[in-house]
Length: 131
Image (cartoon, rainbow, N blue to C red; front, side, top):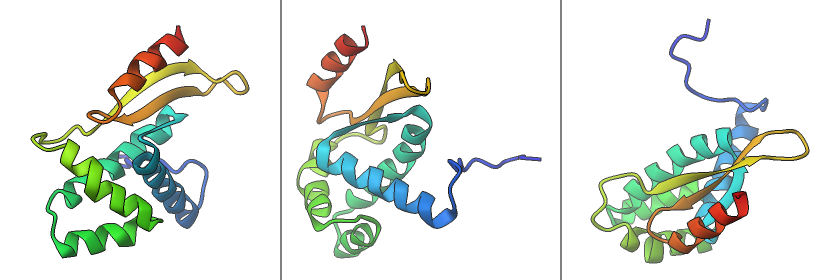
């Protein structure tokens, strides 16, 4: 039975799943928003919000932990220089999920995962695209 099992496995082994989520968080930081399936967005949101909360401390230790969890130095730099300052004053809820409808090929529910403060114009474009 699956009582209290909250991790989605996505049909992948542990190392592959962790690499996927790290890659999605890194791309979210670099691009500002990513278009993925809803299940992956919900799992990516957890990791992205945890890394922003860690980065808000601003200490050298927090920077080193974030560097060990991200794939690129560019993502680390952008996280500390633009993402964290824009989230100043927020206690949580740094990301939003905008549903876009189903993918034509397999019918998967697609959505747009983006930062709340950084990507306000993208929400209007995403809602216009879904209509």
